[in-house]
Image 1: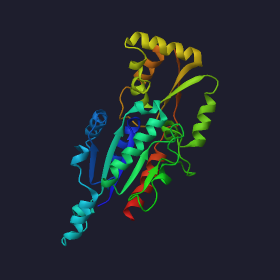
Image 2: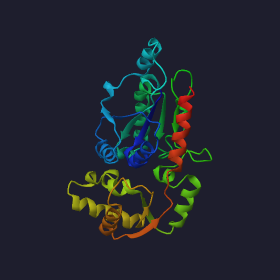
Image 3: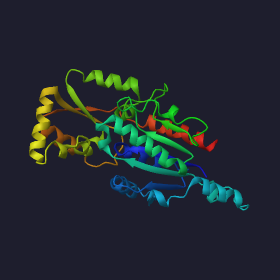
Image 4: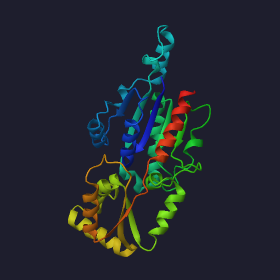
Length: 280
């Protein structure tokens, strides 16, 4: 029974919903219960995707499932032993503030998911150059399943979630050059909803108004003047336009818009991992 685990920052939950919704071969979706899944589970419900929410300790070990299948002489194609499961583990946004902590948490979670997984697909990029060696770090006979990270068509690890969303390094560099004359935030739908959590606004000051004032001052110092709306073609996150306008009005930013978001990298990496674990 192949089980693909997707370990992801929750900023990329829309892309995961899209993958799950567009793969009819998936027999079962399990979401690991934690504090990051409420919005994601709601989106799955909205598109009528059945899923189980289980604490990690209640998820059956892959070795136990495979052992039962070997023992069961009546196990045939399309039975419990042949079903394809996708296991989702979402991580919090705040980890990006400290790349070292992010790496440690991602590596710890990869090891946590290993007993349940035929393969682990990591929905992250280089993220401050701390995850560039994750595939080789988990290679070898001592590690029982492949670990893969998001890469573009030239087999280069993407820089971050924006790099993945726009199709890889070349497109990302082109986008950055186009806005290089002034500091510009690049917002996907999930970024537009989660920027307060991402920037940990509540930690700047206990008074929200003073926290915003401090952030405005920071923008003035470093020269940020714009927010760019990156259209991904996905509509799982509601009120994208309103969220962008709210952010722009708060900081007196100009709004730009780009239509080069897509799911190519997510689809490609998912498809390759799916083939890899089914051929094991």
